[in-house]
Length: 300
Image 1: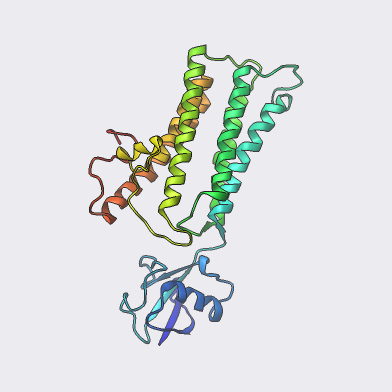
Image 2: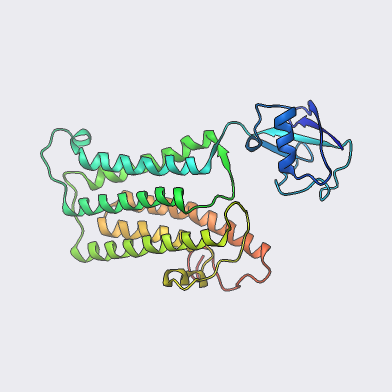
């Protein structure tokens, strides 16, 4: 059957495609890329039934949407895109390099001073580096992304958040006048940080195993025998819980106010994501456990 493609801006006709009524929206995007506008690769397209309507999902079929011969579909150009894997690599490589730069070359930040980093500052540099090295390795070998791309313009905002916060934290912890916390705070913070990092990794591996490669299958996550996964009995997004815990304990370990601000800012954003995912879980799975919260057990 024949479908006319119009631009959402001004409803300007762009062309027509010949396609089967059983075709998915993903196939529609491929057809548009091949025969209507070659500069718009599929990830750059948003297809709608109306100019101001909602974006159709790739897996929806024309038949299920009751789209018939001679119908019209609206195309929105999402702008240049970048894969989520490359987004994460850019976001996480920056903090690793910026922190190590501040740690190894403090004279660039503080002037020509002959100073040796405090032992706490050295441990903090190791913890920071391990965290972001872990994130980079997870991006390469663990994460399976449900969304292929995001707008390229958002990359600069995301990188600025991570990179500038890193510089802010590193500046204070590596400062020649930095004052270390008490011994108890240091060890409590260090042990808590290590446990939360292990917990975060464990949850990421569990979530990876829930989704077969190359699919967007969604299942209810449940503990898998790993003691760190028991947090699934209480929250929908324990990976965010552990992530916040890592930075909370890092703050205790270093007694650094900027690290606390970083933990608070991260918690706010992760709480927003967790609440959204928690809501989607409950909507998608009628049997979803009633006692779970989104990110903080018994609280939020």
